[in-house]
Image (cartoon, rainbow, N blue to C red; front, side, top):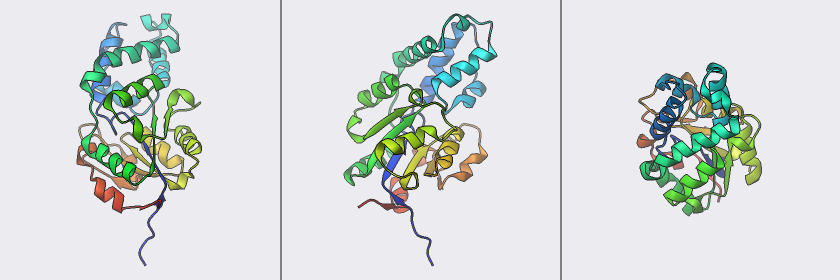
Length: 232
């Protein structure tokens, strides 16, 4: 007997590295910003923070570099500075991944509810969604700054499902990071993972319902649509 397909009523998109090609710009802006504090920000350090919220990242950096000039500022101010550094570059440099955007277009035509759940701040999320012109897609936007514990905890996805009034088992998450996959699965949701093929492999990819080894650029929207049943 054929396995029954999961019924999906809502799709939750991670933003950075999943829906939009922003991770290289984030890395560049953070390298410049942290360099101003005398911190040499490396790709290895950056990988650790993929999928995590800005406040959690900064708290960790403050613990790692207690004697840096960062310690003169509170976390809220440092998050603001980090956002400003990113937004100086992002609007003219960041684009959506075409295949993932095509998937969102198809879902919109099918009247499937969509949300963004991201480690970025609301200011950054709203700025990028507006500048890229797809505000009309999303019924709900949730930032890590609005919940107590960020990814890999399930809180952000559970809060998104609550706001959308959809049960977790009827939600599909698109993610690119280890922390994101762990968060989605801990929330009891279905998951498509689109890991950047240029970044180190993480074993948690295997937890996803669908693994796209080539990342967002290799994503097949039609294959994802056919893998699940959809809300009529």
